Image 1 (cartoon, rainbow, N blue to C red):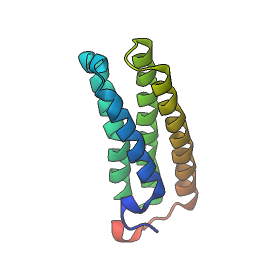
Image 2 (tube, rainbow, N blue to C red; image 1 turned 90 degrees about the horizontal axis):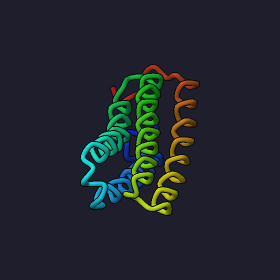
Image 3 (cartoon, helix red, strand yellow; image 1 turned 180 degrees about the horizontal axis):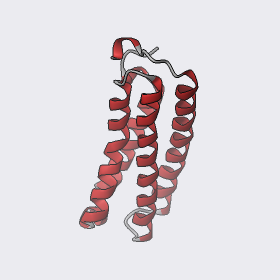
Image 4 (cartoon, helix red, strand yellow; image 1 turned 60 degrees about the horizontal axis):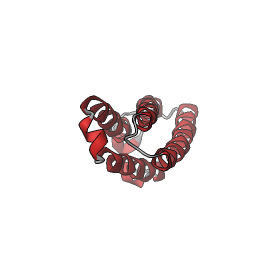
Length: 128
């Protein structure tokens, strides 16, 4: 069992994805669209934040609930990036790369959530 969130392989994938989205947020056109920029930024920040908060919960089921929030935020980021592409702030290649990475990450989160709910450990050890 991991004792720190950074020990989970999925966490490094999340951070890679978030960094790639942050790079898009630096594009001038997207920066000028304050509402869309803020929506993407907040949802993107929410992905790892919910993972960290959930990791500190006392049960696997509680952790899985927070991962579900992360997965929802990931879906929001992907939807908002599609809007950014529609508005010509990001290219088709940029969008495609993020969609591919985001969809893979969504599948990974979904599998991890299922695992945690099946195991349903009630005492996550040093994390309570």
